[in-house]
Length: 305
Image (cartoon, rainbow, N blue to C red):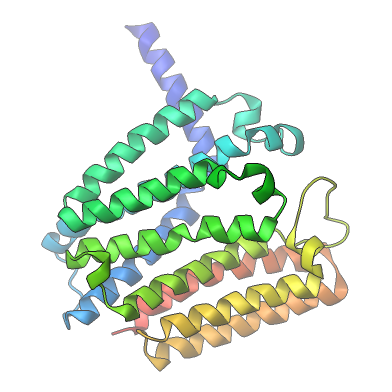
């Protein structure tokens, strides 16, 4: 019994190491909370209801929030398995190449998470269940890299946008669960909002793989290699503008204004990095640009009502 307990605690410690290294609890929790919160605020706005933080509201929304959290965690796990051969060469310091967790450990966990996801979505009715099955199915096809692994990995931008496209599905699944309606009955304005989320998450993907000339590594693709430094910054700018255009269907002008201000900070930092090609400017840019996701959803929560 004592030996079993020790092994169990040791196994939990391995998962804790993995989570800290590859799924930062604080940053991911903040991102997921504001992502979900913005959807809930828009749902209440469509019903013309005020935000209430009472026990009944928390009880109602917690299973759906947990399902969304598990969804993003599962995507992280899938990425770890997909990249294990690449990481063994280029990132041997990461948990899986180091042998902290094995492929079977990750895949067993993802199976449990998928079952939990579907069960949690089903609590919100038939249409939420259907939407949940759709988003889970897309995630599984993503895991198989759309059965085009070799071709997709040779086309970094296409690889990125086909994978971030899943944000649209999880976004519409949240709306389907909250409204208890099929995807076909959800307001077109909310569908536009979901597409805006897709563009936002592209910002994260494009900015995190943008480097100075000295930071570029042989065998590792980047958007700065493909489009050049200025091109990579303009790509992020395009995604940000498209996100605002799509989301403007459901958000007030008072929400759009601060988004453009923060976008100005991103563009300014990006152009400084592109002009001077200094690592500290590139690191600042890579830090600021992904924060635009949290900033956007956070501003919607604060200013939408």
